[in-house]
Image 1 (cartoon, rainbow, N blue to C red):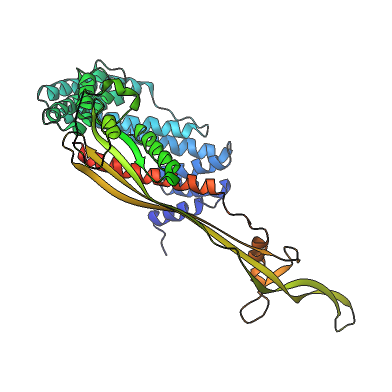
Image 2 (tube, helix red, strand yellow; image 1 turned 180 degrees about the vertical axis):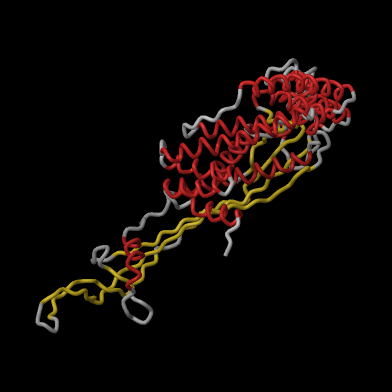
Length: 452
């Protein structure tokens, strides 16, 4: 069967993954003889990656690699003669990138100085042409096209003219215009995001920074956190939940959510009256702080902690031991044997449940903006075994009464398992952390949709 060049390349690539430098070099020679210069160079390259300095591979790579360079030189010269500067520059870049890669294995390929000089002249002309194109695109307000043009200029020459400045203009101006339009429509979030993108392109672009600050000021939704109601028994739970949610909202990543501090009492709007059913005078005072658009109140509806009674049951098991027996030849040897025993399996569990209500009320209209009832649970369970048989020698019994040899690891874990339930304080902290996260998510989610 005739082996085609394609099959030869495919077989070579497959074998290269598991071949040594000698085999790779041999494959490279075969490919080079078949006229597949680029593929041959790759085999030599891989051989040198596995064995740096391998002479046969270096010789082969210098020859085949230079052949690859010469091929790119031809493409470069043809494109240059045809006036296709873009293609000529691309060919030169590919050529130099290839030479740089091959240099990693200490094989230097030659790019004639005259070619480099020709490339530099072509590049200068190409950059001037691109710069004119970019200016024309800006004049026509083709911002996307101008941005692409100036990005290409900077890729070719990072310090060319005023390309950096003009790129920032091309990127920032459409966002700036979008921001001002959204601002006029009082679409605070969209305007804020647009001005933020503008400042990402140019932190000093026009008045984007002050407009973003103004948008944030106009759209800010300040919330006053009121005391959470509870029975006297659950007062500490209510205080911790309120404090946790207040801190979480203060640290919210949503720039439009603000929390009014109770220390701002001097800013209370004089004699502001709110007719909100179910909210005390003290809460109205807090809610009336300057800038508060809503009051967040809460109530502990249920807080229970139940720990079940310890449950202990006797279970059948086996103790492993070794006994001496005689084989057919009368020789004595030790073999494993199992004796029936019993062990105690102990279990105990505890669960803490918190049910609470959150209510967000407008200070302007007395409207209940959000009302949610949430429930969170935290639980813990211990299960362990006790026995006079040491761990590693105790095996559980199967349902049919036989030794469960595969159950040794599980039994050892039970013998060494934790025997005390999680402290009540830890359970409570876990519960309050989850309640805080859940409640904060509810408020943030509502405000995110409510704030335009």
